[in-house]
Length: 407
Image 1: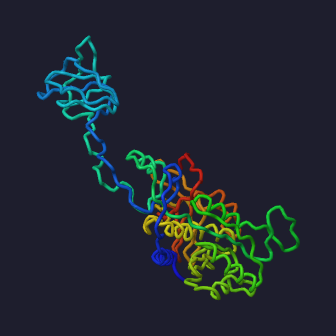
Image 2: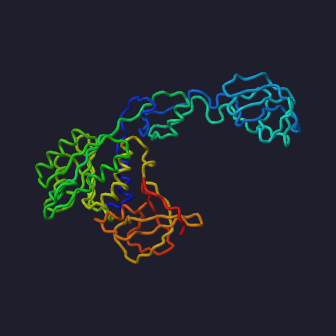
Image 3: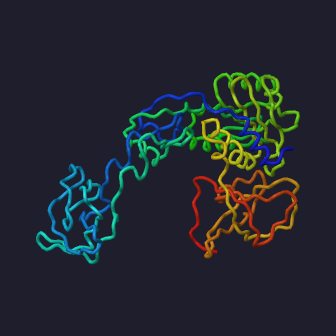
């Protein structure tokens, strides 16, 4: 069995990046992954301009506090005539500063008296002036390939006049659950049957990843049918996700089906929950086989599959690893587990600026209720007891509320 950190590194290193991209209008690029670099078309700022509403002044001596107002410059105006020593121009944010300007003084620090303006103190040279190209120069790389195009990235591209961007093609991901015991939510249950939670869980996870999702339904516990449907899936999709059917039971056929039509890379991780997790390839598709227990699916998707999907979309390997930081344990546990554990937990801020983490009750691999309450996974290394005050690694969960109460 591979340790989690070794397994994730092996997985991400083995995955190829996307091939090429296609252009989309800027407004349609939100959430997509950039295929090619975006460069600056011009210096930013393009000209020296005012960072404040106030007065542009000329004071090479550094001692003047009264100036004669000779001009008014608004945003969008052309640069005016140069200022001479002791002169000022009424100016607004973003307007070009005239030649000869030594500083811009905010209007709240001035008092106007006809054509004269008085300052509280002599202006500091260079203050409140945005200099040409101080953010970046023409030709600079603004956004690197692999960037997820969020609101800030879209705004930056728009500020340089880019109307279209080259983005990677969305991954096509097909999702299956496996087992004769599964029924669709809303259907009646016979003895020994349960409603299918895992497939809906995976569909919900995928909704936040800008991929094209295909619902493959439920695979029955029949070897020939499972193999046939997986073969069809890998011909349609870039990625196939299954849950269940990858253990060692006589009715677990997914692993055998993959080995028949493709190649199994890794089977079994030294983690809890989530040991029967596997991945491989078939044709051009990548196949990830998640455990049947719903909490194990929850953990392995967040810790393994989501990073892999982001990598396949073109994001850098280091950038896709689950975000983590250190938090102070507010719980104790003497139990030693031979596998690395990912406990469902709640983080809350401490008054000293640190974060505290508390493991929830109900840590069984079939207990989804703790997943609903959790806003983080807390990692416990193998064969390690936990004491209150220990520093533990925590992984924040997406789309979770964060408590503002202090502990």
